Structures are given as structure tokens and as C-alpha cells.
Image 1 (spheres, protein in one colour):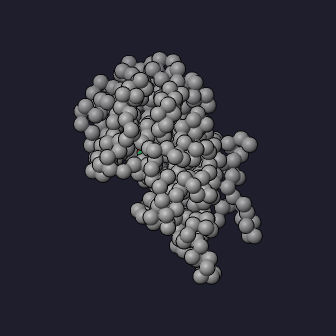
Image 2: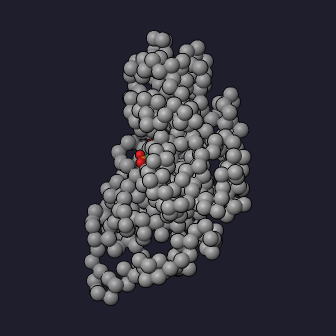
Image 3: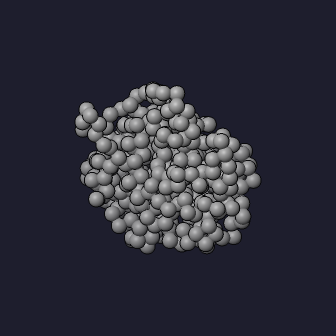
Length: 424
Ligand code: PLP
């Protein structure tokens, strides 16, 4: 079945009311009926959709099943935000004293999570340039728990060499975790390239109209085989005291091992659950994602090509431009388009500021992936917390402007940008 079809149907069996739209189960808890059923539910014998909404909910479960199908994975866990998805993906396999090998080209919030919060928890982030996967091996030791990178990086818009990174990870039996927020499964399915876990901010293209914050974690179908008896992932292979000594890697849920443990340990204990209403909004978004991402990609390509011809523009970053350093990887991995995100560089902070103040259709917003076009100056907003050295490492010079091309007509977007650049 094509992804477009799965996006509309996967994971939803109509109940006796036969509603075409997925119902919203806006409930905190569920009636167990009998004391014995309650006890077995708490012993993980009855599934997770009807215990307590912090760990599972029928509406959330439909989103999870649908997204797992779209990514070509097995288990999926929906959480409250993209940051929660990234945090849980890492925390599921790490403890104090461990390290993770991570790309320097990341969303600013992810960088601060890694360099500040994880550091306080005793987890070290070791950075590699995603354009130089050869740097990775020197950073790996026996405490390394994953290699983390973005499929299309925000805002530097790099496309990594997946095959090379995944090969290195597999050589050392380490998990790869890919943030697939910008590409979405409609353009790229990292799990089918051999990545182990995908994390998403569903607040962007997935919801589509800027209406809900959410996050998703999806695991590769055979991931359990990589984790079982792997000394790097002791917590999956040792008796779990909070579940009567259950060994997750030996449990009946091995097809969904990674997300099951994240749900039953991290979501249970730290509670970044998505509300059923937001899960429902994400389901509405998923249904039209294939069509939207195609148009976002087309608009961005036209805008990028036009920007390249403008004298005030020093450089345009869009992976499907032949001039772009990512062109070879983009042509290989992004055959259906490269999403709506692009950036371009003007000479300095002041020029960038003036252009932002001059555009009309674009809104100045700290977001991407909305159906309405967005313009951002990362150095003064999303990446404000990074120092000069970190900014350069992330590919964010002070004259960089990021655009998230929406679904307006490309002609109107270019006309709006033209009048802003002409004022320079
Ligand atoms: N990953 C990427 C690539 C992002 O761009 C963002 C937010 O902009 C996030 C993760 C964090 O997602 P959220 O805002 O849903 O927590």
C-alpha cells in the first residue's frame, strides 16, 4: 500500500459506531471491570491502551500505529513534544557516565538539551560534523550508546550520508537515532535505510497547520535483535525492579522493545504524555501530509532557485540545488523532494533584520512546517543561547535567514521576497 493510502487508513479499525473520523477518547482512566483484570493490567499482561492515559490511550494508539506504518517501523510512542521524543529516545538507553555521539548540525533546542541538561545528568555529548562521518569512529568507546543526527538538519539544511553513518554504527553495534522532523516519512524513511530509531517533532509538518505540539518515536522492526544481549544496553537485558524483575529484552513485546520500555519506564515515571485531543489533531495532519509536503518541497525549490539569482544573497542552502554541497546525498535519499525548509545568507545581522521587517506574507515566527510561510533569524531567536563558536559549528552565521515555505503560491511568495530584497 502506498504511504498516501496508509496515512488515511492505517491503525484505525472502525468500532460499532462506524465513525469515519477517528474518535477522541478524552479520558484519564478506564474501568478494569474486575480486580483480577486490574492486577494483570498492572503486570503488563493486557496491553497499554486501557490502563491510564499517561501510558496509553486509544486515540493516541491510532496515531502511533499509523505513524509506525508510515515510517516502516514496528513500535511507536507518541509524546507531548518533539523535545520529549528526543529526550526519551536518549534516556531510554543511557545513564550517568555514558556518552552519545551527535551531529553538530542540529536544532538549537536539541543542542542545549545535549550540552546542558544531559550534561547535568552525567551524559556526555560528543560532536561530529555531519558532513564528515569519518570523524565518528574516533569518538566511540564502550560507553557510547548512540549516534544521533537529523535527516535534514534545521537550520543548516544538511543531508547526511546515511549509509556511511549507519555502517559505522552497526560495526560497533551502536544504535542510530535520526530526527526525521523536516523530511517526514513521506520524503525519507530512515528506518528502511537501516537506522534504528526515528524521533520526530510532530509539531511541524505532521500537524501541518501549526495547531498542536507533539512528538513521536518509532523503532525499526528488527531492533530487538540488536539490543538483546548487547552489553551496551544493559537496562534492556537485566531484571527490571519496578516490574517484578521483568527482563524487557526477553518479554513477549520484543517487536516493540524500544518504545515499550520508553512507555513503561520513562512515560510512566516522567509523564510527558500527549493529550488525546492533540493526538487527534496530528491524525488530521497526517491524513494530508503526502500532498502538503509535495507542495512545500516544490515551493521551496522554486524560491531557492530564484534566491540564487539575487545579488544581495551571498549563499542559498537548499539540498536540491545543484550548487549545494548536499546535492549528491539529497539526489540519492530525497528523490521525492527536499521539504519546505531553506536558508540564505546576507552580509550581516542588520541586513537580515531589515529583510525580516519588510516581508508581508511571511510571518516572523519561531516555528517551521506550518501551512503559512515563516521567516526566522536563527542567530537572534532559536539559536540565541549558542555562543559564536557553536553558531558557526551549527552552520548559523549572523546573516543567515531561514524560511519555511508554506502552501501559498510560489509566485506570491517570490514577489513578497523580491520587494523585501529590493529595498536593500
Ligand atoms: N527537532 C527539530 C528538527 C525541530 O526543528 C524542533 C523544533 O523546532 C524540535 C525537534 C523540537 O520539537 P518541539 O517543538 O515539538 O518540542
